[in-house]
Figure 1 (tube, rainbow, N blue to C red):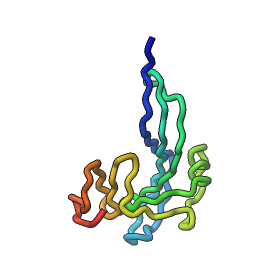
Figure 2: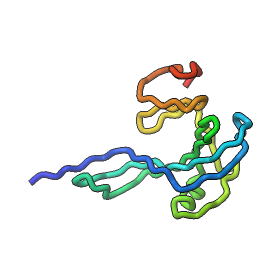
Figure 3: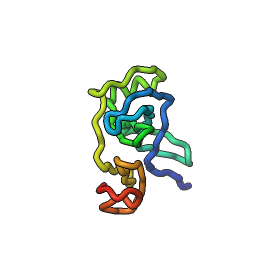
Length: 123
């Protein structure tokens, strides 16, 4: 008898959008919220999730923020709370699950670049 199991990183887009004036670029945009997590799968069926973290991405300039976990949990339950600036922590060239994200243009890659190949800014 053998077991097929694995541990992987997952990402889930949450059903939430809030229209804002972006503090980074000054344009109108929307906050789009997603959750990242680590999951244990047994026979390709997700069994256990942990390490849940919530993020917000602005639609105008793709700036990414780490969201206060309490607000993120409320959104995950289906509530529609307003996200305030004090609930956000800006991510500077962050790396999540092996992916590197440019805070300037939103380009994502798994390569270990020092500068973004799309816009030329430092990761």
